[in-house]
Amino acid sequence: MRSKECVLAGLLALGLGGACGGNSSGGPSGDGGPRNDSGGPSLPLADLPPKLAQAMCAAFQNCYGPLFDLFLNGVDCVAVTEQRIRNSAFPLFQGEIDQGRIVYDGTKAQACLDELLARTCATMLDRDSDACLAALDGTVALGGACTLDEDCKGQAICKSSSGTCPGQCVPLLVAGQPCDQDSDCQSGLQCSSETKLCVVPATDGQPCEYTAPPCGPGLLCLGKDDTKKTPGTCRTIAAALSVPAGAACDATNSTLCQPGSSCIADGFDLASVSISWLCVPTGSYPPGGSCKPGFPEACASGYYCQTGSGLAVLTGTCAVSPAAGQPCAGSINTQCQPGVVCVYGTCQNLAANGVSCTGDAMCYSEKCGTSGGCEAKLPCK
Image 1 (cartoon, helix red, strand yellow):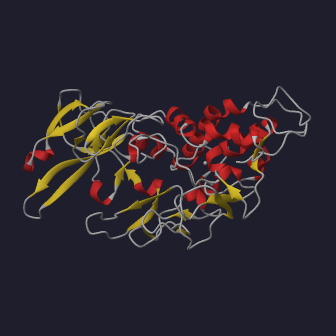
Image 2: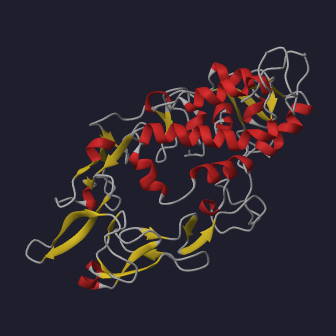
Image 3: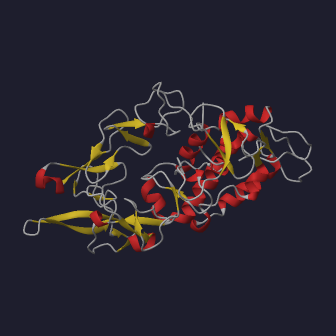
């Protein structure tokens, strides 16, 4: 399930998404038309995906700053986000418009895009703004039968307890209710990946995940132990990326280097059985040159530090990151070429709907269906 604004915004999830108000001529419109009494140029529905992708990537850049580029690792945010939109429920919108369950006003789409473009960390969890509901809105009232979240009028989603259609339009979920993704929840709430409940996100200095809530937008959960399943602590990006080049860092405790530097495993102390870490400029190691593993990789772009085993895991050679079809490489990070994802140990190209898949992470839609092909995530089918 996905709230209307989140689809309109291209939220992935990025995860990380409406429904559109009628045009002034009185009838629903799928093509937007050249112009109407609203006074502004009309944006055809088919032209929304790239513009939505641009707006949402800009909003995430506004919130996460240098961390955004760090975790993209060379991936083109706009291109991938556009494909995620096109492989979501978006292709079904025109049919719902034709049947009167969704109304789209292309003359009001730009106001929605402008609102999304201006978002910051403080507004990242806002749902279904007035500007976006004026552009795209459903006509089905609460309790009515629905197929898509976008069918539902206002701040509502389509929920099916059985997973089959039709679902039922219900209000956005409150804290403590079961959810599938952030956009199921009311403004200000997130869907915990651990409990699958809507929760108030943790703030700076509070515990995060493993029985604690996730951090809110713009914060990092530092020090979480995935082996022991103990929580970390939410910290601002500035606090997390604070160590200058030449100073000690610690990738295991997420004491990371300033932008432009990598935290490398610099040595091993047998007495204390501990690794010493050091910040060095990213790209310090040339292709084919000797290297030490780190986060982010200190090898040149498109390369990773290929290491040995035992104590030799702390030294290696800068090798080309694996392409699609090759085994995922691993040092401190799982490595594939930019735009390629590691699925069950193999690097795979992101796949469009209908393409065979081996796991959700391989699909633009983030859903590998039971038939073995990528498919759109829908509340019911």
